[in-house]
Amino acid sequence: MAHHEEHDSHDAHHGLGHVVPVKILLATFGALMVFTIATVAATKVNFGYTFNLAIAMAIAAVKATIVVLFFMHLRWDKRFHSVVLIGGLLAAVLFVGFALMDSNQYQESVIWDKDVEPPFSPKPIYP
Image 1 (cartoon, one colour):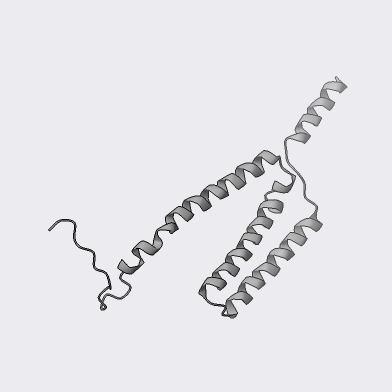
Image 2 (cartoon, one colour; image 1 turned 120 degrees about the vertical axis):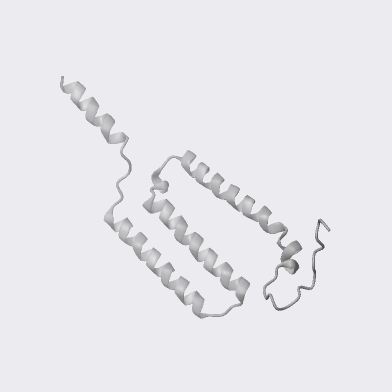
């Protein structure tokens, strides 16, 4: 009977997950706060629209990576879950990239100010 009870407690222990020490959680929190301050500081300096956007996206990517690795325990999880996550992210980047590839084709026809005539007026399909 003792062998059966020992076996049950062993099975229950393996399926629950990974316990992260408080030291790692506090370090993760500290890193996220530092990157949050860096995000706010980056908005105070004008590097130009494109470069400011690149800085903000890089900081956001680092913060998201920290959250996924430590708070969502991906660092200690199976490699398959990492492959699924990275595959999903690459698919999202691919879809957004394809959507943005033709953005230069229609930018001239977007009317930003209704009082100003656009440089290119598309002809109606039906007369």
